[in-house]
Length: 116
Length: 111
Image: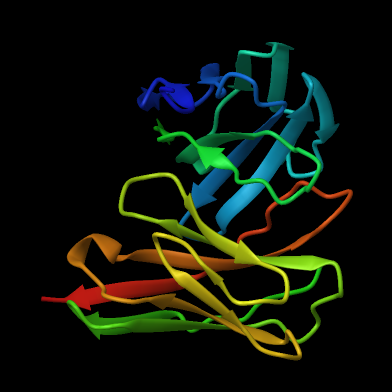
């Protein structure tokens, strides 16, 4: 398996522009998570999906952020409009919750976003 | 959510064992103890997890105190590739799939 795939790996944009980050989870996984990592705040959970349905979006910082999962193999995280404080590394992770809910989360390589 | 406390940083010599401590005095009976690590410029990766008994896998061992208020991740023979930030995370057994990452321990391996 190729693991969790994220694109782009690096994104540089100007303040006010729309940014779309993409994630392909591991095939067969039914949970997908979006995290953000900064030096100041560490690794934070933004939102997660179960079977393509958003379950908890309490970590989404504000209305400028939105996430979708149109099918089991694809998710997007969109920032519109972007601001310099959105600069961070964004990780996507996926997992399959079996009978014992202790399963591993598999993380992608991340997208490093820089907003100028 | 129950909290964990870890030292900010640790150093160890290459090819020696490393013991990474984690305190979780408010752990509940259904909380699993998970360890993840994050190598430089990579996403976190799973290391090991346990509930009450000590656990071993190819990467590490997890020693859990009898009262479960602390645990220790043991790397038996550290290599330079083990240099990473190690996170100790409590995760409820049911009804909560989230992982809440703390600040972790930055492990430096000295050649």
